[in-house]
Amino acid sequence: ASKFRGIIVATNSCYDADGEVSPAALKRLVRFLIGKGVRGIYLGGSTGEGLLQSVEERKRMLEAAIEECKGEIAVIAHIGAINTRDSIELAKHAEQAGADAISAVPPFYYGHSQQAVKKHWTAIMDSARLPFIIYHIPSTTGFRLSASLLREIIENPQVIGVKASSGNTYELERFKEIGGPDFLVFNGSDEQYLAGRVMGADAGIGGTYGAMPELFVRLERLYAAGRLGEAQKLQTEINGIISDMLSIPIHFGVIEGAFLRLRGLDCGSVRPPMEEVSDGMRSQVAEIHDKIMRLVA
Ligand code: NAY
Image 1 (cartoon, rainbow, N blue to C red):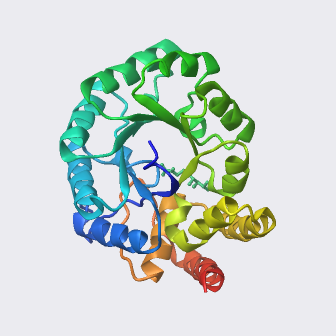
Image 2: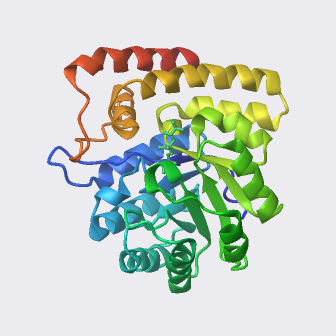
Image 3: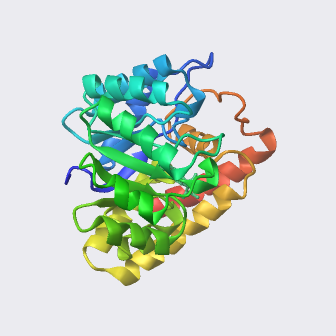
C-alpha cells in the first residue's frame, strides 16, 4: 500500500475544442504533474468529472492516463456511478487496463441505506481484484459513511483506505482510529491538508493540487520534515488562493482548468451543464494565477 503516498492529484477533466474527451490533453497534464513531483493521480473523480462522462469515455481516459503514468506514479481510477452495473464494468476494465486501485463514491440521488451502499461497494470489489478506496464526500453525495459501516466493510481486505472529503478532521481522525495503522486515510479537503496530516491522514487526494502542485509538494515535504511552523504558514498562503478560487461562483474544476491554461496546459472546453469562465471572471482568475506563480517562484 506504500505506493499511495504524498500528493495525489485529482486530475481535471480534459476535452477538446469540440467537447469530446481528450486523451492527448490528459497525457500532457499528467506529464506536467509528474514533473512537479506528485506521487499519483486520481482519475475521473469530482474534478475529473467522471460522472459527466459515458462509460466508454471513462475507459479511454483511464487507458491514456495509465499509458503516461505506468511505472512512474500511481493511478487510482474513480469508477463510481449511480448504478452498480456501470461501476462493475468500469472496475473490470480498470483491472485489465492496469490501474493501481479503484475508488467509488456511494450511489447517489436515491438516498440509499448504509446496507445498500455496502452491497454496492461489495459487488464492485467482487468484480475486480484491485485495492478499493472509499470516496467519502457527503456534501455532494448526501451519504454519510457511518462508523459501523466502515467497521463492517474493512473486514474485506480489498478495502485499503478512505478518501475523507467531508472537511471534518474529527471524522477523518475517527476513520483512521477505526481502520488502524495499515488503513490509508486520504485527506480530501485541500484547505485542511496540514490539519488532516496531523490528525492521521497518510496522504492527500485533492483537486486544487493540480493548479499549484509545487505548493502542495512543498507542504508535504515540510510536514514530513517536521517543520510545522513553516508548513502552517504555507497552508495559510495556499488557503488564501483556495478562498479566492471558491469566491468565483462556478465549479472549481472549471476554474482550475482556467489556471492550467494560463500555465500553458489546455484542458479544453467545458462540458455542460458546467458553466464556462465568463469574461467578467477572467481578470479575477488571472489575479489568482499571478498569486500562485509568485508563491511557486
Ligand atoms: C476529486 O475527486 O476531484 C477531489 O478529490 C477533489 C475534492 C475537492 N472537494 C470538494 C468538496 O469538491 O479538492 C477538493 C476541494 O476542491 C478543495 O478542498 C477546495 O475546497
